[in-house]
Image 1 (tube, rainbow, N blue to C red):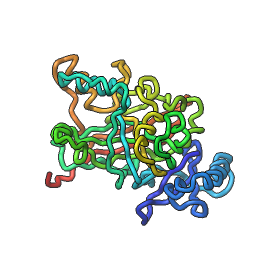
Image 2 (cartoon, rainbow, N blue to C red):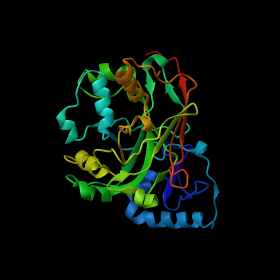
Image 3 (tube, rainbow, N blue to C red):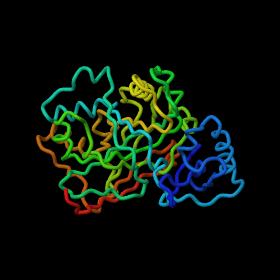
Image 4 (cartoon, one colour):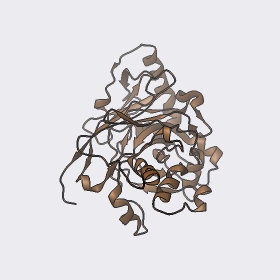
Length: 329
């Protein structure tokens, strides 16, 4: 099943069910007005939503064209946004480029932070920052959305609480990261609003590509019609989503609608390319002794997408243009 949220006069938008080919959609106000309402009562609502999905795929009943430009984020605001760093190749590269080493604990205990979830961007909303001097970067990741997760859940049982999957562009202001982390209290100003894919999908839609708590598909990342990378999301993920959920729920329960990210997808192979500009820069630093790739500039166009074996888009594409507001920094 595929679900999206249309922009309207309400903060949480309007839930719609979307056909598998992302061509048609139908609002379902009699079932749930918003995605959060559906997640809150998933066990009782999923069957009705799946019935609408089946009708859309069969070309039955009322529907209208699906247009990602009309979409808000599937969850325009979420109760919680947690982001991990489960691709240790990315962590290792960035630390080696600074002359450091990755702490041994990173291989046994996931790294995770709590981000701002009150304002997720839609898939066509612009990336807006005060100025180019902030070092605006993209980060392509997979996210899962959970139902209610009990305190102390095991990694195996945690996977049973995954309700939906999607993509995220976790925008980062790189030139604020180091001084902010030096304070020892985590990200805040360096992590502005992130953008979510047009649709979220249930795990069954992904078939055998969703296995072992990992999504085994390539993430395609484009900048100004040039492909930055197409790394495999499942092959070099050091912690699967069950482990990440269990880590987050070690000392507290998680509430339905929690969004949890994989961290920037990264493969060791240079041929796989990159999912963020800072990784391109640190690879250059390690290879050439200098960073050559610039961060995002005004007018740059970012595209993030994942496809099935037939080339069809699984979640729709995140397509954003960079703009600078000139606001006081």
